[in-house]
Structures are given as structure tokens and as C-alpha cells.
Length: 622
Image (cartoon, rainbow, N blue to C red; front, side):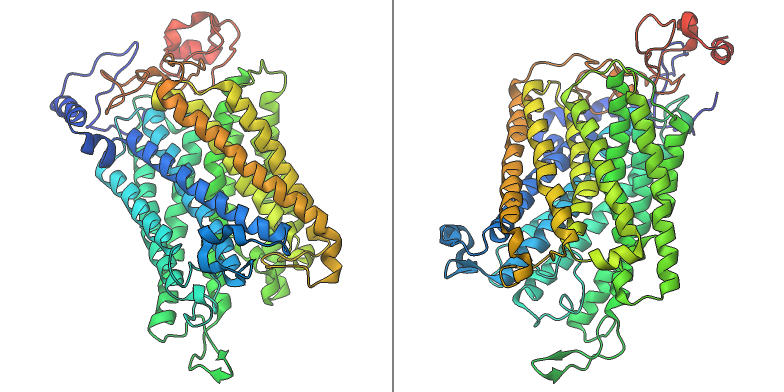
């Protein structure tokens, strides 16, 4: 049996194994745990416990999700009722409401901040930061992350980034207003519009802190998976959640430095007179000195992160959904090795498809055809995953928990959004659809909404392990159906208006006779979006109420097989009070013929399950 790289700082053992002698490290660990119990500052604020840091990421991400959703509701009001009087918002928005109308530059700032918040602060830090932190040590059998101090720093860099970005919302000149992709020259010239001034500077500073946070976290995740697996936990026995988090961390380590470089060069152009992204610029009829730069270079740098970022957002959700589908279908995951292969394939291909965002930049048609070909190929591993999820559900003894509903909803949204991705991956069609609401609908379905459904599924499923209580399932059902219906009611009509050429980022469409026929549909989309946003408060109430008043959880409420359910109901710092269990089998032994129960945990040796052992497993039991 393959074993992991030995780690001297872990006391390992388990059922059917000889105990590892008590070590000085164990004494230090328990002293450290006691220290956490005595000082609330070190337990709740500057904690080095991966589980507390995960909760910090989750709560911060939820706060940002409320802010980002509120901003989208504001600009949907403008889009749905562009002629309406918005004076009732003046107490909130102040000078950005003039004559009952929303300021056009502030509208662009709303769109910019919504995209930035949702992509980076919620779906990157909130999703991956929460569940990578929480599950990696628990599922690989480690006391904590490889570096607890580095892990703590990753959260606090994210927190500082959040404070800077939040403060920019209250600037006199407004927050950044260059779109979440911050394309120059608009983002490179502080004098271009009000949002290109201090708001853009704070955006760049905030993102520098954010990137440092992601790199600290990513290095920690990769190191923990490689070096700190418990005895018997070979790479072929890792749950798919860990494979997804592991590959996501690698993507971040390789791609986020490129955004850092792009931001640094943009700061040089803004503040030091360089011309990396600027050339032949005129403002008010006066030529600027900039020569030789290219804004297309910035697009290449941005999308070299931007497309892997799509999978940094979606792959953790893929891993969690795979785990939840197998657990609640009471079946082994279909095609375990194919699922790992598809994750690896997606990770590799995500680095060579970035320029499909740039078909309209005038690139060489041959180069465009190369990126189109690679983009369409990435549908193959994605299709493998969808097929395996559906095959896992097929004839399963399905338990429709709230987590299971959101996982099935994830698969539905991933299919719907993925199909439109094939259309946009074709350069000929993309050139026609570019910068229309068809693109908005596509990425909100396949990345935004799908990732949110994975996030919700993960919270409902692992909430008992996080807080020792159960979330209310009936409220979970209400939350699911309102959100599922809301998402489709918002984004399916957007495909229709996008095909008709309806442009994105426009403050008002009433000046175009061609689009007046979509007035009622725009109102419908806006109403559905605002209602879907308010439906999320069902989840927020359920979450915080259940922390304090929810039904107490049992040790393994879902009858799962992975290692996190072998810890106490709410694990202390160190996770296992005694020896860490050893691993003997893969993580998906559900409904195995001949077994006494419909699940066999990973830490149960084959010698204890003679009635269900396959021929090769009988050899392992001897």
C-alpha cells in the first residue's frame, strides 16, 4: 500500500495499527490548544487554527456577498426603470443622485465594484479560502496547515485588502470605475473620469494585498497536501474535494503573480509617466507624451490570470459537489480516476485559452483559430465531469438534503452555462456576441451562479462540522427553490436580448429605438434579480440562527466515509484528540455489496470487512 511522505510533527496511527509513541510535540500541541482556550484574542481573532481561519474567510465573504448583491440591485434598478425617479435613494447615495437620476459615472463604478467583489472577494477568497482551509487538514489527516502563521497572515492580508476596497466606496470622487477588468487607457489615466482617480489607486493597492493573501494561502494548501497526509493516504485515496483544492491552489500560484505584474505596470503608467499600456492618447484635444505602449498588452496579462481565475472559482465547487453527490446518492462516485484526470485537464488547458476573451482586438485570424480550438477542447474534460455526476445520480438511493439540492442545481447551471460557452468559444460567433448581454448571461450562469450553488452546498453539508449544529433543512429548501428559480429567471432572458445585440455596461438604452422592444423584459430581469438577492436573507438567517439555536449535530450526521467525520463533533485545535487515523481505502465506499452498512469509512481496515472485500482487497487484509 502506498504511503504518504512521513511528517515528523504528526502523531499518526489508527484502527488496526500500532500506536505511535507519545512525543514532545503532542505535549506542545495540547499546551497550544489550552492557550487557545484561555485567550479569546488568539482563539477568535489572530487564530492559527485552520478551522477558525476558515470561519473568518466565510463570514467576511458573506459580508462582501451582501454588499456586492446590493450594488447589483442598485444598477438593476437603473437598467429596469431608466426613466424612473430615484430621489428616494439620495439619503444613501448622496451626490450620485442628481435630478432624480443616477450619475452615469457612478453607474460604471457600481458595475466595477460588483464584479470585483463577487469574483475576487466572494467566489475566490470566500469560497476557496473557506473550504480549502477547513477541509484540507481534516480530509488528508493533518493536525493543521503546514504553516499556521502563514495561514493567519493569508486571512489578515485579505482583511486589509477588504478594508481598503470598502473604504474606496466612500471617496468623494467615487470608487474605481473602469470595469472589473480595469482596461487601460481608462484605468491608466487618473484624469480620465472621477473613478479613475483615487478610487482606481485604492483598487490597485487593495488587489496587491489580495494577491499576497492568495499566494500565502495557495503555498500553504499545496504544501499541506503534498507533505502532511496521514499514514496510508496516497494521492489515489484523496477525496475529490482535496484534488480540486490542490489544483486550484496551483492555478492561483502560477497565475496571480501575472495580475500583480499587470497592476504594478499600471501603477507606473498612472504615477511615474511610463508608457507600458499607453500610446497616442489625446485628452480635450491635447496630446499626452505617452508613446509605444499597448492596451492590448494589459488584456493579455489580465486574462492570463482571468481565465484560470474562472477555474479557481469553479473547481473547488466541482470538488465539493462531487463529494456531496456521492454521499447523498449513497453510491461511489462514478469514474474517480476520470474525474481526477478531467480536473488536471481543465487546469492545464485553462492556461492556454485566455485570448478567447480578445477575439475582437484585431489578433491574427490564425492565432484566433488556435485559441478557438483550445477553448472548444476544454469542453471535453468538462463534459466528462457532467457525465460522471449524472452517472453517480443514476439509480442512486438519493437523499434530498439542502446540500444535495444545491449540488444538483450546480450541475444544472454548469450544463446551461457551459452550452453557451461553446457558442462563445467560436470566434465567428463571439465577435457578434461580444459585449452583449449574451456574454453576461453566460459567465453569470457557468461561473457566478454555479460557484454560489457549490458554496451553498458546502455550507449546508459541512456546517455540522464547523459549528456542531445542523442548519434548518426546511429553510434550506425554501432558499434553494427561490434561488434556483431566480437565477434562471434572471439569466435565461439575458441570452435572448444578447442575441438581439443588447449591449452590456450601457447606463441607459432608451436612446436606441432598436432596444425599446425589450423594455418589459428588462423590467422583468431587474425584478427577478432583486427578488433573488433578497431570497439570500433566508440563508443568512438560517446560518446565524443555526450557529446558536440549531439542532445539535451527531458525529457523522450524513454517514460519510471521509476522515473529517472521525474527529469530535467540533474538533479542537489539532483536530484529533489522540492519534490520527490511518487510511486503508478510497473515499467512496458507499453501498458496497456484502457490507453491514451502506458506508465504510476510510479508516476501517479491510480485515474488519471480510464480507464486502473484493479479491484484491482480501490480499490487502492479510
